[in-house]
Amino acid sequence: MKTRVCILDYGSGNVKSVCNLFSSLADHVSVSNEAAVVEAATHVVLPGVGAFAAALRRIHERLPLEVIERVVRRDGKPFLGICVGMQVLAERGFEFGETEGLGWIGGSIEQLDSREYPLPHIGWNNVTVQRANPLFSELENSPDFYFVHSFVFRPRDPLTVLATAAYGAEFCAAIGSDNILGVQFHPEKSQRAGIKLAKNFLAIS
Amino acid sequence: MKKNRLIPVLLLRNGWLVQSKQFRRYQNLGNPISAVKRLSEWGSDELIYLDISRDETHDMRRDDLGHPNRSNIFEIIEDVSKVAFMPMTVGGRIRSLGDIEARLALGADKIAINTIALEQPQFVEQAAREFGAQCIVVSIDAKLIDGMHRVMRDGGREPTSLSACDWARQVSQAGAGEILLNSVDRDGMKNGYDLDLLRQVSAAIKIPVIACGGVGEWGHFAEALQQTRVDAVAAANIFHYSDQSVYMAKKYLLEQGLNVRPAELLEL
Image (cartoon, rainbow over all chains, first blue to last red; front, side, top):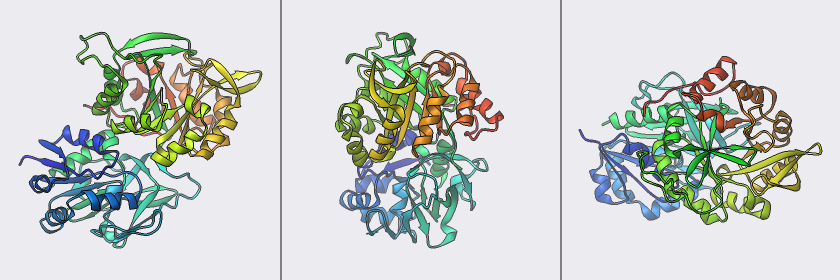
């Protein structure tokens, strides 16, 4: 089957890089918030950077949420959230006060307890896969990915944690509930491991 | 665990990749895009791209290099982000928040500022508030003068009254996310980093310091990581003169037991 990727653009800064990554791998890539494009896509990607509350405000303003929720949550279209695009899937976030999230995966967004290490957590960090998932197939045991964040996903159900990383404390680096997947790191900046992860995502149907 | 980073610096002057010696002499190294592609394939952890042009022209003046002539820095950033799936810092000639925004929109992840931070110290805070601390790298050019590491301005030519440590503290309090610390004395000299400078500045602040200036052999990277608290080691010239340079440097650092991301060669 031909892969058609729809990259949702709520105004996040990293859309261009995410688009570059998928353009090198998929048959067709669109950056679009149009309902028809979301429906025609085989895979939906939500990139994000910046603060949780601002991201959600713009998501509600700019994205066709009803259509996205129908094709992703009801029809099971593969979905990948990146960084803040993963965090917005939680029920609520606590960056600059409490904000309600999309609530697709149970849990909340809280500041990373990095102990003596400075925040934001910026740089290459190895990721430990906790649960077999096609997203991490054929990636070596402890692949390095590039992170830029201060907040982390605290899932309610530990079974949704696909991978963890450690920076002061251990935190959730990748989350998944059936077809809904999210990664805290930036595959579009993670070279070989990022390219492989994006390929793995496109292989999910 | 977070890794120490190995970062090639690319100096761009009027559209060409150049080598620099003590901020004074420049030698042409060719097409910046093919250099970036090579450095990506060799597994760099990040790239720092500094535009040191003295005017607005970036014409590469050749069309036999497999890429069209680039007319400005923006087209170059855009091209680079298509071949480099890695974090990219862009610096040089940043005069406003708009200059930062334009570079980020084209695929840069972080912006290095130098002159404007010295001229308007409040700019660091404004930029960090607008784009996040993780995005703002303050570049410091230091030179040893009468026993003190002084901050230099105007492309390393004019000394200021500031010490490198004081300035690093000041900008880190203002919200800088990282410091790119370059030694004017060691630039292009191949005799190793100014370890005293690195030691003092990295001990004075909590944010990551990227060491730059003077690397002539892989061992110089190891010295900085072993003897100072720098988070990343950068260099320009050494990466352009040997095949698979980044890969070989990584391999060496791993053999020394250092905490770097394993060496890998990519097929792009």
